[in-house]
Amino acid sequence: MVQKVYVTRRVPEAGLTMVSKGCDAEIWEAETPVPRDVLLEKVADVEGLYCLLTEQVDEALLDAAPRLRVVSNYAVGYNNIDVAACTARGIPVGNTPGVLTDTTADFAFALLMSAARRVTEGVTYVQDGKWVTWGPKLLLGVDVYGATLGIVGFGRIGQAVARRARGFDMRVLAYDPYSVPQGLDPDLAQLVDLDTLLAESDFVSVHVPLTAETERFVGMREFAKMKPSAILINTARGPVVDPDALLSALVEGRIAGAALDVTEPEPLPFDHPLVTLPNCIVTPHIASASVATRNKMAVIAAENLLAGLEGSRLPHCVNPEVYGPRL
Ligand code: NAD
Image (cartoon, rainbow, N blue to C red; front, side):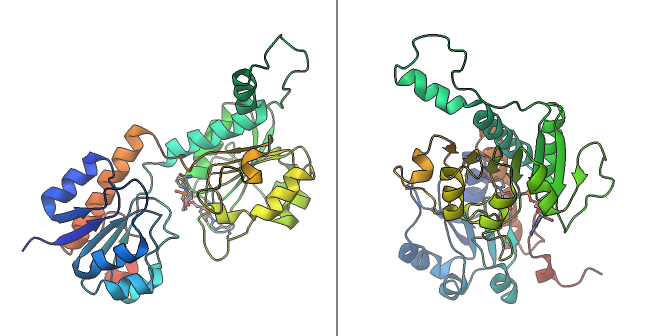
């Protein structure tokens, strides 16, 4: 019998075609997220769920989906999923690591460059008809080359950002108490404690997953440790940075600027002070948004879903403990 699955958004065709061929798929066609009550209704008889970070997969959803056998998230981050609850019910959860590493690192670096060299302010200046002459002091920024970059969370994306920084002759500091990469090239980064990183960095770029521990990880205390000339870049998850503390730090000049691809809440209202401040750049969570990468993510998420439906191990599983100990 063909298995039923629910897909919570129209992801790239490369993935949708695989899902539609392999099972009886219903897709939420709107561009905005499926309302929670509709989602709870739709999952009542499905065996697979292909979802986005806009959907909360929690106990209530799992209760509403008694036949569910696999959850496939179209993202590398999975803070929208109660993984422990899925594991307790024997449901494997898939994500899409690796394929978005370089695309996301490119974007983090684009934000760093834009904030340092005031690119978005320059664009607005021209669009507003203010450009009347070349000015010796017009929109002065800070140099990226030779500056110190602090990377918080030195996993796949953090290390990819460090590789980019090398081309700009930056000094790179990294903080990651959990995974010191094996065979780390000592020229790539110097591993330091968090306070050293905060005190010495001209740019601080955040690449930790959102967990109970990393929620509000960057707040008042951290801004107080940073240089007044420092720029914060967040392409990880919005709640990792305390938005009220960030706003005060920017307004009071405790740090010089910020560039955020992720915010809390998302979306941030267009008249929110973080959007309107000239020293804060906000983009709409697009760090992984290249055509090629989104296609690859759609395929990996489809592979995870189909593997789960046929009872095979997911190629990218965040809770491999559902399979029991490896023999
Ligand atoms: P990863 O697991 O390879 O790296 C995360 C690193 O953070 C790990 O090395 C881990 O040890 C470290 N870490 C965890 N807790 C920490 C803590 N308290 N302090 C310091 N380091 C800590 O993951 P990745 O593929 O590099 O992705 C990182 C995150 O980036 C994802 O979880 C996701 O939320 C986010 N992301 C965002 C976008 C976007 O569109 N803006 C795109 C891709 C990924």
